[in-house]
Length: 188
Image 1: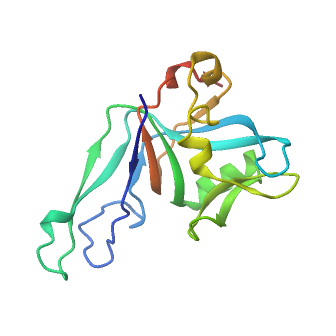
Image 2: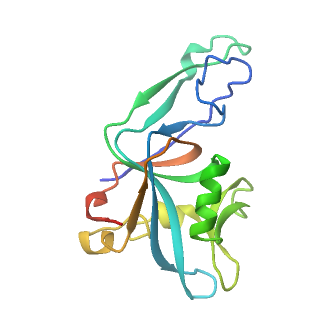
């Protein structure tokens, strides 16, 4: 069963020891990452469209923030990088390094940073090539049979995973840990 977790992005400006990552907005990091590709249907105009997502192998790390350690308002909560034992999909991605953003743009110009109409937050989101409508991450990652939440091996086989063996970091508010049927997704 997939577990969805909301991750808090640490504020490392006040305490440089909170996050040793090069970017203080990062709350996940990995020695490698996957670009996941599949197709879906635009909720607005009904056209078939390509969809992208980012996934991490089981060797990734998450920044765990312990809010209970901040006894005074001026004290930053303690944070520690924890190794994950399973793969994960990221969504509601607020921060990506420029190099990863460029790579994603090469794969599809329709996966780009934009402001969400639902939440008002800016994050990386799929858009329809025909009508331009943003394709909400919750529908793609959190709903059963969503593009990146298949409910059987055959549906999972429709998702392609291309691995990039280079350092990765991101700031993501959505994190689907241990996605069911991940092993049935096709490596390309």
